[in-house]
Length: 267
Length: 284
Image 1 (spheres, each protein chain N blue to C red):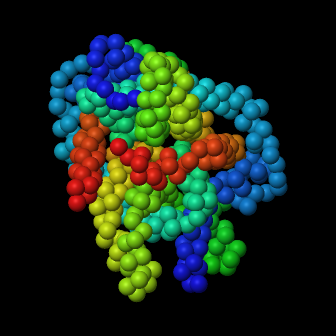
Image 2: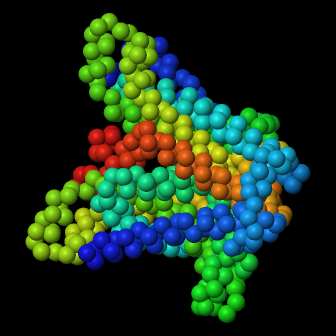
């Protein structure tokens, strides 16, 4: 049928557009010598080894991973009590905090970055590694906040009611009923924040750019001061991590629901 | 458990930590930035406290007007291209089997989460003379010899469409996936071809969604801070690039802050407009 054919053609065209730059980067990353040729000349995985062996790239990798792990954890720690409160209580004015949690993500990132730059410079902490953790946590708090709100909305309130009737207090209900039910949403929220923090450039650059190099900052500096195929191998590595994390979310959770496929999740 | 209003101060304790963090590390920095936009530049340090309007007065220059006009025009172009590609695509995607949808969503999220640095690097490689797409054209016999396709406006536009396309699809996805299927069935029963049904039934039914998405993508594209710098020439720099440049390389934080405040006002105005459109759609 021509309809199906046209549809396939369209899908393939979009797929090629999305994949093309990544294919070229993957090709460049396996060059044998230090040049950015495509198709690659020779084949070598040494540029992948470079990420872990070269002290500078390794330092950047560790800095990025530590930043992503800690800032995502802090983002979840901020989002969880807030989402729980908004679900448990009727307090319309508390929605202000939800708005504050979503704002950094909707505004152009440069603005949040500049806000942090002026703030840390004024308070005298500019350049301290932990300032990047807090900055990223605030910048990405939207993600766990949205996934957790979806999670709470999906809880059948009669379950909680039953537990309360049986004599469980708030704390016990939270631990034995609510937390197990929202765990998948908590994990997805953490994973989203983790992957985005790993890739984030401008906020990290404006807070700790002069004292510490994360991987995106390192790639950007390499872009300005001398190309190496390691940039390509790191990029492929990042795509692989993102695909792996989102693949796991899709495998163990319902990614369609997280992205708004069901109407019940909208409040 | 029923939702109930907080009865005592103790009931508010869960709000304490998130509220504190958001106020101290978002509201205060934001206000600091607004304050700094009225400060005086100090080349030795970041700035000196003052209350001057000279940072805003610089907006009146033709240079700034040019950058602003270019930024807005580019963002409009990116939004139109993205929605034109993404709307039919998302529609077809929501009509595909669930497994296909899931795979696409994973891929789209992976591309969306890519650092702008990586997107810029990838496209600068694809458009380069040595490793670029023109080598493929030469191999196919379409061109005489490989050429560099950057820096240039086309490269900036392509890179930004690439960056915003997954975002556009994911913004459109909920609205399209929830579209009432009987609407289309009725059109088909009355004899409309699938393509005609798409243009005459689906598109008008989602007119407000399309407008809201255009605005969302426009704001998203306004935020692009690296691609114009990596893929374009200085005349292709946008407001976001200029803010970064002033803040970091020219060390003129007050002027950067003034431009950022201006960008916030544009973005907030447009996001507000989107919400208004959304409300009208809900009411209709």
